[in-house]
Structures are given as structure tokens and as C-alpha cells.
Length: 362
Image (cartoon, rainbow, N blue to C red; front, side):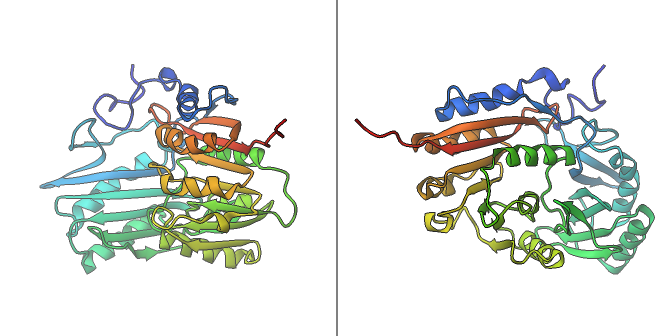
């Protein structure tokens, strides 16, 4: 019996058992392609199913019929989700009333999406639909939020910037004990358990830090890693998304961390941080998007910072980005595979690179 009634139809899962793909081998292969043939690998950290706290669902309307779920494997049709082995259990009971809400909205004509981030105080929902939201739509959305304890529901038509339709309570997610209100649909690590494993591997890979030590963090989001890192050093964080930076800056002020954490908005793909910006940092921590950090890597290498910690969700991008580090004399001090995406071919990993000391020539 399969782990899910949708397996083989829905494109969300690639395999029927979490052990079907050797996730540690994916990380080992990526490092070998980068030139590291004897990298030390920690045991796989297995994240259990039923813990995913983020869902990006597609929605379609055909008359009164609403489909809400993931796209079919190798197809454009939407599989109407009735169960999911990956999501937290709270998601599934929310789907039938969400379908009823979508059916009632004039802003939903043919297709859209529903992004749900299950935060510490409930479901933060973003409805991105294909027509204008009228006043009756907004009233129905407010009623839905009250009935289902959603702290915030945001709306957007097409590619517009989301706006809140209702905020019953400020949406809250704790990062390192600091309360952050992520932007609508904002990035979160897939699970709290996965996030904790990533942070533990990063902390274990940091060098010994003085009270005045400085960490440069790249692709910082709204502070998932920033605030835990700030417990041991000053953190200088860079992120390209304006809404994420604004959320982090608000949290910094509220937590009284203005002298400890700084955030700057910067598109690191178009305007990579320069070596002089990173010089004298105790460590660089980066968690780039799926495509990696190709534009930034040569400047990281040129900065000569002795410790670099790379968080990756894509072995191919990791292999590409780690190769210049290998050529520049960095060694892998630790590599931790984290199975944050069970039933898939994806693996999260944390790789700690250290600069080799040059031996004197005779």
C-alpha cells in the first residue's frame, strides 16, 4: 500500500519510501564533482514526514468545480489534494473550507494559487488569483480568517505585490527566540525540525568566536539563520527581497538588536558583495536559492575568509559553487546531509569549508 492515495499521480513525491534514494550519496557525489573526494560526511539527519509547514498549492476552477493541490507529475492539471504525507496534519482539514472560499470569490475565474505558511500562531495565507478582489470577496475572506483562526490573509491579482485583506493578529514566527512577521508567502525552511538541524550544523561548524566577531550572512531571507547566529556574534546580513528585509528590520528594532544585527537589501546575483565587504569576517554563511550563488562565489573566494558555511537544497548548484573553493585551497571540514524533503530526490545539506594553511616551501 502506498504512503499516499495521490502517489504516482501528484507530482509532489518521486518515490514511495523515504529510503528509496540515498540522500547522503547525493551530497557525497556533489562534493566529488567539486573536487572533494574524501570529504567527511556526518550521518543523515532524517526529518519525519508530516512536519512540512509550507504549502504552495495550485488552484483551478471549472464551473463550480474547484481543484486545490499540486500539479500532476509531468502535467499541467491540478490533483485535488485529499491527503498528504508531508504536510503537518493541520493543513488537510483547512482544504475543504478553502475550496468553498475560492468557489465564492469573484476574483477567482480560472486559475490561481494558495500559499500557506503555518506560523507559530496559525496559518498565514496568501491568495493569488486572476481577477480583481471586490468588496464582497474581502468580506468573505475576513469571515474565513475569523472562522479558521488565520492571523493574516493576504491577496494579490496576478503578479501584483500582495496586500493584507485582513490581519486579526500579527503573524509571528520565532527565529532564535526573536519574533518575526514574515512577508506574505515568504520563504521558510520546510519544517521546524529541518530548520533546527540546519542551525545545529552551522553552529557546530563555526570557528571559535570572540564577543566582537563578525559573521557575514548572504541570502538571509527575513532572519531564519540570522537571529540564531546573533547569539554568538555580530551579524551583517544581506538579502535581495525588499519585504523580507523590512520584516527583519522591524524584528531587529523590536528585539533591541540594532547594535548586533544589520540587514541590507542587495541583489547578490546582480550586485555581488565584494571581497572588501567580507574581509576580516570570522565566517561567511550563505543559504542561496535553488539555482545557487554562482555570481557571488568568486568574490567569496577572493575575500579569503577562513570559514565558509554553505547551506544547499540543490546538489548540482552546490557542486558548481564549491568547485572554486576547492581550487582556492579550502577543505571540507564537515558536511551534513538533512533529509528535509522525504519521498523526493532533493536533499538539504550544510557544508563547512575551511581555508588550508599554506605550508612553507623548501
